Image 1 (cartoon, rainbow, N blue to C red):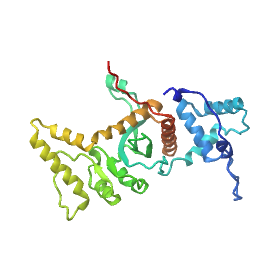
Image 2 (cartoon, rainbow, N blue to C red):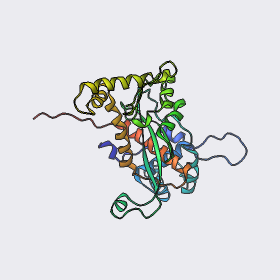
Image 3 (cartoon, rainbow, N blue to C red):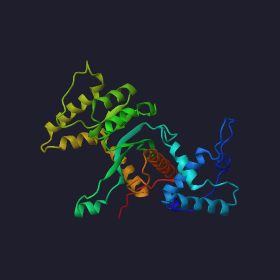
Length: 302
């Protein structure tokens, strides 16, 4: 945690070499700055909560203090070039996770604060976007991210991420929003064991016609068996979650909390293409922070 607050900043030789684009000999004006340079600027903008003009001032001061002979893009160029980043779904980590936690949260684009709405009610139109994350519970890295409208269901996005899920994944965790036929079909095709609590009124389906629902049928039978042995309603479901290791899904909520604590609960940009670039740079920033070190809890005995 101390290293995250350090202001030790340097430009590696690889970053200096990849700062400018290599000329390809095509017609038209060549691109001067590489995508890595624009992404670096967006990550600094997210960490220090700077507008584009102040961001250029920060970059100018850094190259001046470090004595690095690098040109700095204008704030308008950073803004325009950001439009091309984060538009396609990509794997954000080079690791090979065995578990994935799927979850989503809302990010406000326009509207009043929560305190004002709670105290005096809503008086303006409020616009939200949803960010869907696939997180590795072991390293806490964000593997996949996707920004959609508030009306898109979580299960639909999980199915859309099918082609981008790493082949090393063996187990997936999700809440009741992913208890849908399409999600089970996708996980069955990828050979992934889904750990998803079925709905309380869930029924067993025929395994012959729908073999991808075998894991869900087993969970329903296990829940019914544990519930019959427990006296109070809900104890069987809590015991099932404990035996299945479903508590790892809470690490997805931890990642959402970390995202909002670092960068806020809203989006600065107003257009969707720029919002995707903003979320993309913020997710990469979290992964970079995780690589510096994660806090470790220890039990103290008195």
